[in-house]
Image (cartoon, rainbow, N blue to C red; front, side):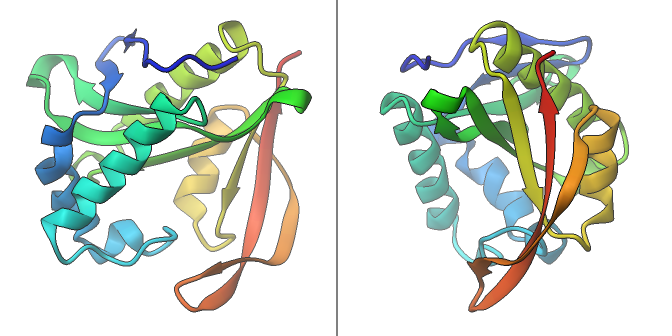
Length: 180
């Protein structure tokens, strides 16, 4: 199902490309903000090396065929990373994967992540032949829920104390979209 490379995806305003180690300063810029990591399973970054390590993890997953993670860039703004999105937790036997995403807050509210998710969902269904794409969010993350609903993911329910993050158990709201 997966290959060890990232295809270039283009939308009206965006180019989704392979992550590069040189993206670390841009990733650090927004992962060092509490508003970005509030609902993320990582603490707010304090050092550039944390961004370098996260990018290496995502690149390694691509090379190991266990995940796909794209750098989100603006067509009109050069090649600089403004966010990431992709698939992980593949279940090959069940033709499903989970999506994840993040975006620099200076771009929040502009429809960028809606456009990026639409592109990767289409790629997941058309190219990867996934049957189901799912997402897990913190039930208090209303913006993420609205984003996923815009992309036709439906809420299925809440899994109580599903993840252990930042030294505590947290609930997970599960959303999904089926390829029908």
